Length: 85
Image 1 (cartoon, helix red, strand yellow):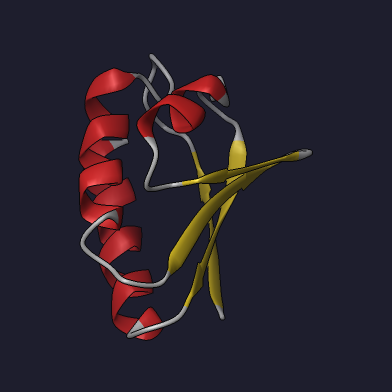
Image 2 (cartoon, rainbow, N blue to C red):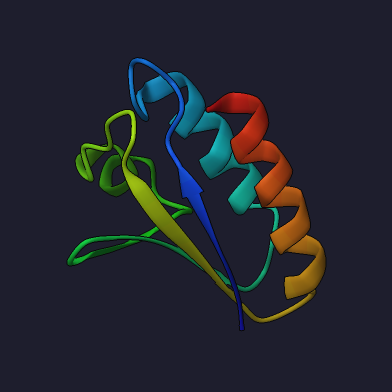
């Protein structure tokens, strides 16, 4: 299992455009990928639950990756979060 934390930087928070990009990237990996925020744990491969987390600028989230090629996936997702948020 690999994890990393990320603080939301985008003024609009995690809205539909960046969320859609992140979900598309997450779907490319066979393992499980979860976004964890406070008491919520949502599948990063599902757009509506990701949007439903209601993430705002400054929120600190954790991403948890389990399964096939998790090291590669972790690095790629870290870069993606920095680029879209």
